Image (cartoon, rainbow, N blue to C red; front, side, top):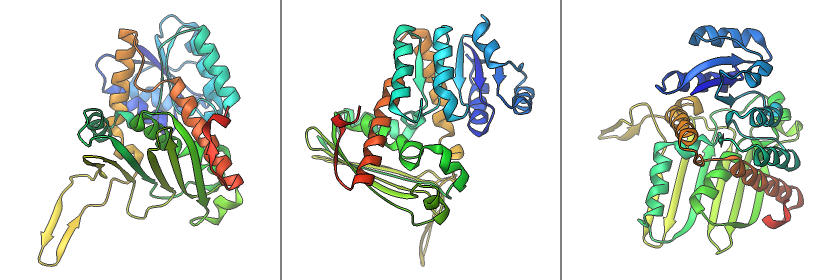
Length: 331
């Protein structure tokens, strides 16, 4: 696969590293509206710089990985689909449902392989947890608990353009909940506060949130988010069922535990998503290439992006209106 990377910022560099280690993918070009950033990343990986227009018009590119700023995702996705390029797009497709649906309509009329960057589905621990649920190891799944806490809050200026905690941060957890529950969600109840950084509240967002999802059969999922965990990147899942429980734990550098007469000490979790999900990003590229070759659906696709955004919209409305929201009211 000859792949062009659009976006040479922090997440673009993560993807470039994952691509570089893949034997079946050639990083064929880097594009970024800030050309010096594109040039620096292209030099690092030994590939040319192109404009986005060149990426979409050339026959030497099979696929694009869209890792640019969020407001550009939908436009680039549509251009890639019309050009017949396979697509791996970072989440979200857009920050609102109408623009997201517009992009999905373009994909429907120009069908290409399109994967969405819900990389946590590719994490080895979470994938093993999903497989164990499917195999019935805990009987019937009854409750799901997802904890996601960043090590430090983002700058307030980032918050203003991010779409807010539900769309920017918890959207990964909404996707994980949908994937693990594997059943339509009927209701969403969200609560949130600004407990960490007053500047985030002044920017109109929250930094701490809890959301409860209820499926059509009554299964419950609780999601807890915080923009600050002083000990590192806290990423845990518990699945509780009629015949047992599964737990996905935090990753540390060595998972070493020291025990002495005074007690036990373990390492802190890995600091942030770059370290915690490095393997997930590599496996995400594997799945994208295999889906393109085999002409099958990727593990996470554009429709999953739409449904996660519907949950984010419902949580935001629940917080704003102080009531439980029926998901079928979010269009």
